[in-house]
Each structure stands twice: as structure tokens, then as C-alpha cells.
Image 1 (cartoon, rainbow, N blue to C red):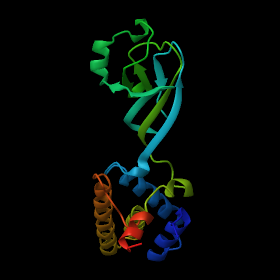
Image 2 (image 1 turned 45 degrees about the vertical axis):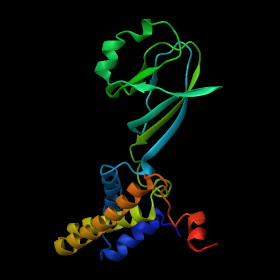
Image 3 (image 1 turned 135 degrees about the vertical axis):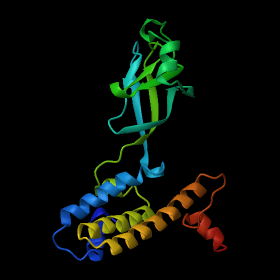
Image 4 (image 1 turned 120 degrees about the horizontal axis):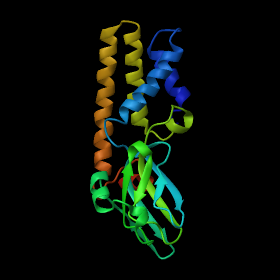
Length: 216
């Protein structure tokens, strides 16, 4: 059975012998989940948004939980075309006043992080659908957000949160032991994720591969 946030917190409480740190232990889970996302770009961080870029517009807001960009794809009825990213200085040098350019189908974009907006190289000549693939800032830990984590990621967070709990109790030896245990699980998690990005990756946790492994 997949671990929910309540299951994860219950496990942490079983490890850490205290009845006075319930709020702190849940906070530790959230803080460690945020920390985990700084170590690599894991699949559970991937976000997707479909948005409409109105006719005559040359800018669009980034998603509320936007962290970094993966790709922007301009969709029409007969094609999907990835837009080419330019860093802000290169974009501004090439397109100093994009709103003054002739209206057409955009080709380039940049991101003005401080403004929370995408800017395109020209106003659009029609309304377009933009498929936005990005990495997102982790939301507060809830059953919904935790359900996006792999089980190995959850076990890593449990060890780390318990480690933080023992630090609250000034039991530093036990805290260090659990920190190392979480780090070991993290290494396994990263190895598995790296393998999943290799061409032809196969895992027996996927039913069809398990059946082949068993000779079915």
C-alpha cells in the first residue's frame, strides 16, 4: 500500500519517542521534501500546463508554482513546434521591442523571472495553445503532493524527518544514524532515476517487465 502523509508522519512518530513534537515533525517532513527537490530534478517535480496565448499578445504569465523551464511548445491543429529559449540579455539584444514587431507565429521566448512572465519575439497573429512543461516548486506536504513521490523518496524523507526530530531532542548520535540511513536511500533513489533516463530502461516493478522476468 502506498504511504500517505499520515502514514509517513505515523512512522516518524514511531521512530522518535516523543508526544510533544507533532507539529515540528510534520514541519520536518515538509522541509525535507523541499530539500530533496534541490538535489536533483525528479519526476515528481515535473509540471504541465496548457494555456492560451491570445491574438496580438507577446507575453504570458509563468505558472504560480514555476521553478525552472523544461520546454514551451506552440500547438496548432496541424503541428506542435517547440519554441527556442534565449536568455534575457540575448533576447533583449535581438528583440528590444517585441511588441513593435509584425504579428506572426512566435519562434523564440525568454523568461523574466522578476516579472513572472514569458516574453515572445513578436505579437501573435492568432490565438495559440501553449503546452508548458516545467519543474515546479513543491507545494505544502499533503496527501495529494506526497502521492506524487516514489516510495523510496518517502522512506528517505521519513529517515531524514526522524533525524531532525532527534536533533530537537538533542540525541545527536541517533540523528546522525538516521541521516546516514536517509542518505543511503537517497543514493538508491538517484541511481534508479538515472537508470530510468537511460534508453531502454526496464524495471521489474513495471508489470509487463515483471511478467517477462517471470517467463509469462
